[in-house]
Image 1 (tube, rainbow, N blue to C red):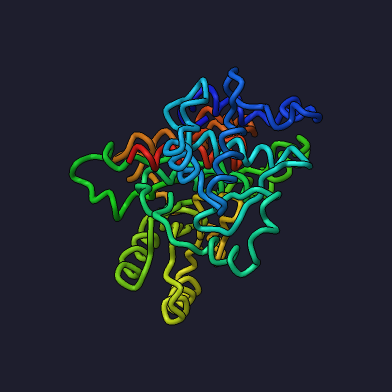
Image 2 (cartoon, rainbow, N blue to C red; image 1 turned 135 degrees about the vertical axis):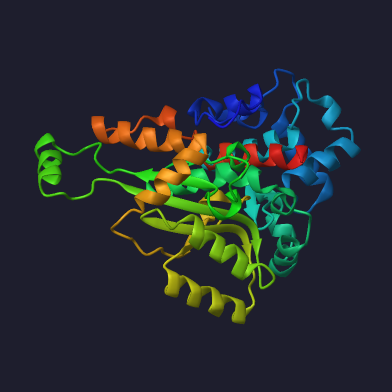
Length: 346
C-alpha cells in the first residue's frame, strides 16, 4: 500500500458486503461506534444544503452546522473518509442513498433529492468551479495515481525514481524519468513456452519510462515533451502523463503531431476519478533497448540500479516480485482517499 491510511479509511476500503446488511441498519452504518455516523452526517448535510457537494464541502458545511461534533470518531482526514464512505456505498449497496454528480470535481448528492432540482440546475451545479484536488497536488503526490493506472490499464509494475538521489553532477531532470516500469506477461506461461521464447530470442519483458507533469500547455509543451523523449530514450516505450492538458485545438493538434513524430505516448490522469484516466495516444514500441544509457542511469541513481536488479531477478525466476516495485492501491476508492489526504496536507 502507498503509506498507511487512517484506520477508519483503511477498514472502509475493504469491499465487504457486511457493511450493507439491509433493513433499517443500512443507513446507520458508519466508521464510528457512536449513534451518529458518517453516513448520518453526509445525509443530513446534503439535505440541509440541498445541492451537490464535494467531500470537502460536505465536511465544511457539516462543521458549520454542528454535525461534525456529533460523530464520535474523527480521523485526521474526515473529508477523505466521507468520499470513501460514499464510493463504497455506491459500489456495494444497490439501494445506496448517494449519487455522483459531474466530474472535475466530482460532487455527491442524495438520490431522494435529485427530483427536486431540474436537470439544468443539476448540470450547472456539476460545473460549478471549485479549487479541486487536482489544482493543489504536487507532482510527487501524483505518482500513486500513475502507478495505479500503469498497473490496472497496462499491466506494468512501476518504480519511482527519486532524482534527488542521483549524483550531483548529473542533469537528472533530462536524464531520469519520474517513474519506470516493467511489463512481463509470463506469470501464466507454460514452462515449454518460456523455454521456446528463450531459444528463439523473443523478448518476454518490456521496459517503460514515464514523465509526469501536473499540467501541459503551450507554455511548457516543448520542454515537457522533449524531456519525456530524452528520459525515455533507453526504454521500449515512453509516455508523458499529466493531470491537465490544454483543450486548445491548436495545442491538441501539435501534441498529436509530436506524439506521432517521436513515438511518445500521452496519458491524461484524473485525480478525482482514477478509473477515468486514459491513454490519449499510445507510445510506439522500440524493439531494442539502449544499454549504454541504462548503464549510465544505473551508475548515477540507486533507485534505477534497484530497478535493473528487480528486472534481472524477475527474468531469472519468470515472476515479478511486488516488493521490488511501488505499492499499488487496491482500488480507485483507496487511491482517491490517498490523493485527498495528500492534497489537504500540501
